[in-house]
Image (cartoon, rainbow, N blue to C red; front, side, top):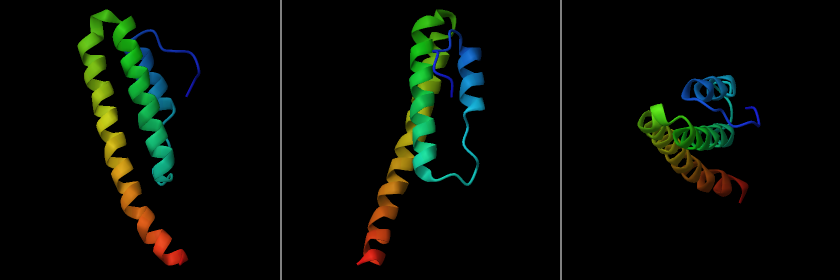
Length: 85
């Protein structure tokens, strides 16, 4: 994703879409993607006031995706640690 903060909700949607990982990317890559997307939408909510509530909702949705991925990662870790031992 680009470094500059998007100034509108449409800009944020474009930046988020252009940074989407490949479908079979590692969960850690997807986690970082959803965390960045949530941050972009939260920032845009304060800049693009006409889309404030929509951007906040999108930020929350991205946070929910990130939480689900964190849970998946934590479930997978113990299994791989047992295989190493």
